Image (tube, rainbow, N blue to C red; front, side, top):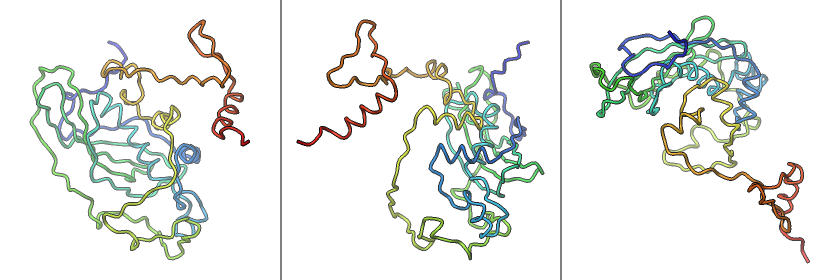
Length: 287
């Protein structure tokens, strides 16, 4: 019997089944530094121990999305390794702050199953809970995924679609013990607007943008989302047509030609290329 795991297929799930996901992960300040380096995280409460302590916490908690990505990544090998599509989320709640040094693990319960009309896949609903080293829940959410079947002729399970609310009720949201915003410093937070300053339907134009590049995949790989559609070029090539390659060759400076002998551009050092691109962006010299 081979040791390679192909992951779970739709017919492998049972209603009510509880899946304990491997492997627990201890988070540190390194995860915070990586997250803040890759993405424009600017929340003062998760950036400064002094700011968090002024608001009643013992230290700055880790960003909520670090917690979510870590817990979510644990579920991928058991829930969505053979996913066709990730369809949605509901009832997401952060139940307790997570601090550097905490260890997270995850468990999921299957709460719904429905075969698709073509009989080649099915939708799986799971309720996932993230737990710390003491077994206390720090995160909970429901997600549903379309998962392919191993055998299209396998019998379909009884259809059970969970009844999920359209939104989380305010009374069900959890405020961390001790959190007190009476000393919240809006100048240090960098945002003067408060709850009453926002209106339903208001459109806000956000400044700055982030260019998504190959480095962006480092985050799901680090925490560790192992879904084939996101991380495997080979898997994508077997499922969808491959788009034409995008040339990343650096254009030659004016007056210089790339060698066409081997149909590839002349090697250009990063330093000289960047200097030429800066000069081109400035435009011609006046006069």
